[in-house]
Amino acid sequence: MAALARSLAGKAARAALVVVAVTVLTQWLLELAPGSVASVILGEAATPEEVARLDHEMGFDQPFLERYGRWLVNLLQGDLGTSPVTGQSVLGQIVDALPVTVELMVLGLSFGLLLTLVTGVLAARNPGGLADRVGTAMSSIALAVPAFVAGPVLAYLVAVRAGWLPVTGWSPISEGLGDNLRYALLPALCVGLLEFGILQRLLRADLVATMNEDFIDSARGRGVSESRLLLRHALRPASLPLLTITGLTVGRMLGGTVVVEALFRTPGLGMLLTTSISNRDLVTVSGIVALVAVGYVVINLAVDVAYVLVDPRIRIRAAS
Image (tube, rainbow, N blue to C red; front, side, top):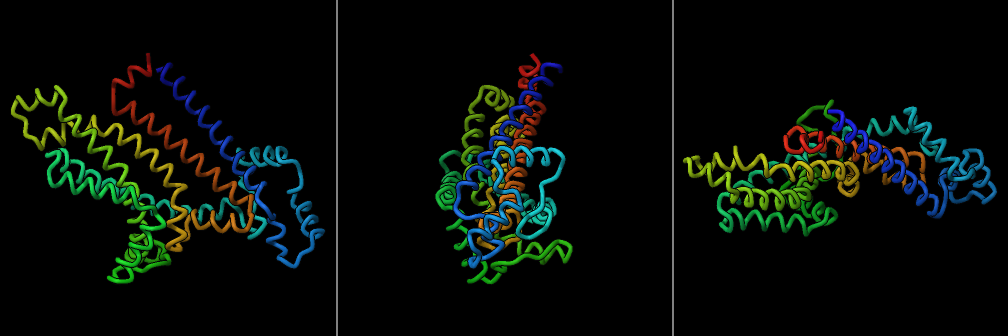
């Protein structure tokens, strides 16, 4: 157990370095972009002297490392600062936007995983058969079509032509689950289809390979049915790579809903990030990036722990 704890502590230390590197690069790249938040606040009619004076008052003319160090200390204390554009707490804005993004992620990933399990199991029952070819074709289309193409196509087919769902907008869960799902399903479907393309290929290949293993042949020789072989004997070991990719997918989705939220005008982290970048709101952008980076590395650590719990062989190797 001590060796396992040291292994996890090492992973946590590397994860902290990743967060620092990501936030440093983000703030440095935003520094290189033309314009400043002072020019956004004062408007196009402001003189360079007025912009420089406001930058000085807000501390944006100080050395980069000094400002980053102060921001990092505040971050460790749970203070993400106050937006100089809106005057609102960055943490408060994130708390307001995060439930929308999380709901889209949960709905989208649930849809993608459900479709992956169904098509993957059907394909593994008869590799090369009709179900296998249909699933492969579906995953190929999902992989080939980017979000900025899939979103408008889905909006046109499902919302404009069929009229089943609204194109844009949002309704909080507090105002009714039915209305909330009407607005959430279309962007969530777009998110889920993009993830399905990756997950389906992986599960299908691992299931087919696992079904050819010796222990499966032994179980088949004992008269175990094909359905039981797939669901009880093959699915668990074949799901380990899927578990890893799903963890990475969740981390990527946390920062990857920007396009989908912008397309459907969904008030989540993606919309907040897009607006903050346009306004040169470095404080808000840094807070969002820090949250995404922390979420990504925490999810990856959780995947490592889940690996140990699911597969005893990994637990033995980690403890040795």
